[in-house]
Length: 50
Image (cartoon, rainbow, N blue to C red; front, side, top):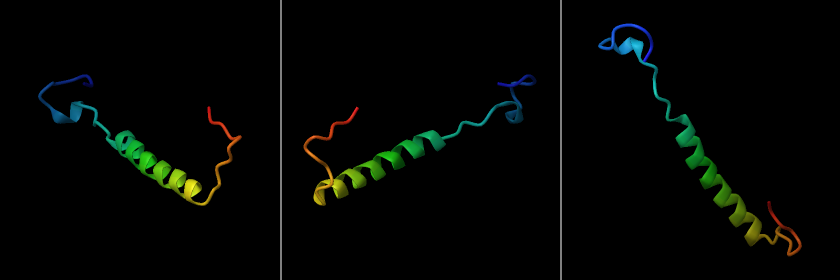
């Protein structure tokens, strides 16, 4: 709430859903990339992640 009348909608800050959408998009892309690497043998047995 910004300063002013609580009944005025213009005194409220909007809520963004962009971070939620980007997290979903990131998970979908990650799954596709991992699947592509796995199918094409691009992961090495000596390769470790952090």
